[in-house]
Length: 89
Length: 194
Image (cartoon, rainbow over all chains, first blue to last red; front, top):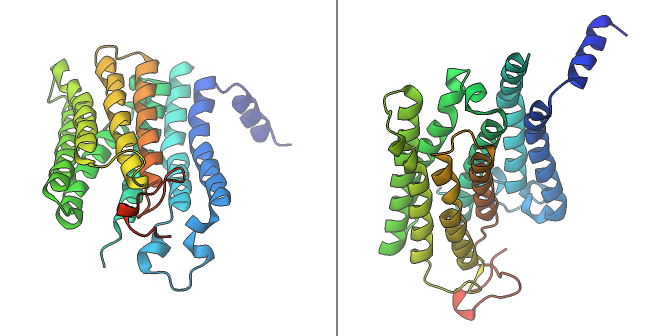
């Protein structure tokens, strides 16, 4: 195992509760969207696309919730965690 | 080529969900850390202002009665006011604490508009139920930014505000065309769709 990987794991292990909470917001939102898709599969029109109009194929609530989680996890959370850790150390 | 009304609700729900997540992260890390990167400090007020701007075409193209139109206009104006006030505070152009009251005012006014413009009872149809639920959520939720305006460092009030927006997004996602609610659907509401 490389020393870089070990140091990253050690750093992750020391991550504060607040950093973990911010890091969890995106994945939890994605998980909520996936759970919703399983509970109400009829709201995913991509699963039954025949005869559906443009908007029914574009705007699918569980997928939108997953997309919000992805956007937050990729573009917002990493910077917030970085700044939080910089302040804590 | 206009999207159906329920799709518009779902798109706004997406905006409110992102807004709620940003505010929740801000509540967790504190305003100081959140505002370390200038773009991030502007993110949620700009998103709120944009949602207000986008409410105008909804008012123009989707309302079918005067009271409905006035309600949508009120939401557009109050969201723009709250977003602009927060942008002014972040930029340093506004200094008075009173500007922080724009957000609770927006939530309270939106809640009242929702409750007044819904003419039917809770169990008339799903849309009526959601109007009542959204109205009371916004009205009661206004307490969080109201107290938070004076207790800026309290994570409780800022988290409560963020979660209020998440609940609003869940309620907006629950909107459907004519649909029953808890097994109830008034025959006056029309034939259920989907």
